[in-house]
Amino acid sequence: MHAMLVALALAALPAQQEAPPAEPAAPPAPVAPPAPAPDQLLVVLKPRVVVHQTPVRLGSVADLLGPAAQVARFARLELCAAPVTGKPRLVTPAGVRLAARLAGLELEKERVVGAPQVEIVAHWEELASDQLLAAAQQWIVARSEELGDRVLLEPAVRPDAIGLLRGGGAPTFEFAFVGKPRSGGPAQVKLSVFQDGALLGERVATFQVRRFGRQLRLLTNVRRGETIAPSQVVVIDGEWTNVNGTAVLEAAALAGTVATRDLAAGTVLVREAFELPLLVDRGGTVRVVLRDGALEIVATGVAQRAGRRGETIPVMNPGTQKLMQVQLVDKRPGGDVVALLR
Image (cartoon, rainbow, N blue to C red; front, side, top):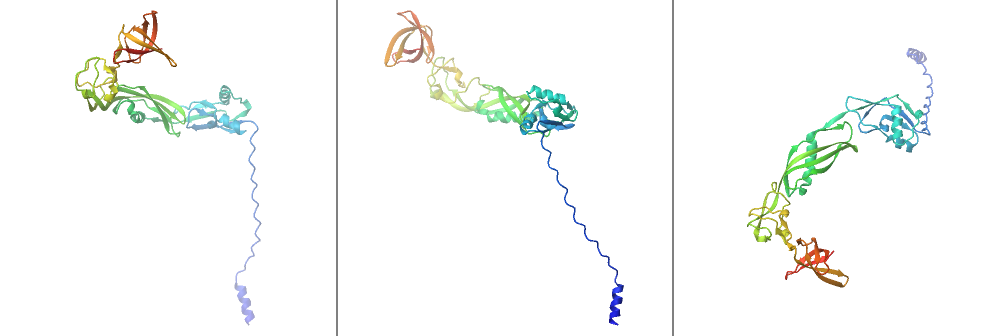
């Protein structure tokens, strides 16, 4: 009875199908080794490229295959300037070979393959006038000591905008003074704009300069040929804009000099208003010293023109009636003017 129940239970179970044995996994496909580089340079032109640098180089418009040294040299070959926005430029295999020949490089016709011509496209954006002006102003402020103690800049002439290649590097600048005022007035700064090492253009920015700083002003009138003592000046802080000349900042700088013209009280002192005093007038006597090692010879001559300390003037030897060129050195307390033979 028990055996019959077991048989009936087994019969009621659904029949189970045996799963077929799993097939072995397929082996991975073999990876093809990279093709060896050709023995000679091969230039494969692309049909269309968007460039971000100017000038356009061969490495930007073609895939270069071959020896590493040749690839590096030809990749730098300059083909043309980047085109303007909306006006693509076409480069053909013949144009590539011509550029190579002009650069002194050999490139055979069969070594240039790929597209029959390359369409070169570039997109430009504007480096605005205000950006150029701000860069120039920052540069000139950093060099304000060349214009005065303190300066105030007011833009006078704005530079025109310059185009930058979109996607290229950040612009860099070089600056130089075109016109630099000695007092107030316009200062011109030339900007040279570069992107990725290429010069994109040059512009000039003009600023009106107002100068401020330390000044020496006269407290008394001074006549031409007179010296100025420290007690005759006062130091103030003021504007130099309308002062013509190089301002004198310390009274000690005037030591040994005399006024070249009459100066009124209140005048701002400038170096151009002073000079070294005359040591000798025309026709005056000059003691000429000739030194040769330990030997010293002194002769007396007659000045053929007036002269100041450090100047070279002609002196006549009355005995020989010959001219000597001498450098004026000093005037002794006794009145003798000493000079050295040149």
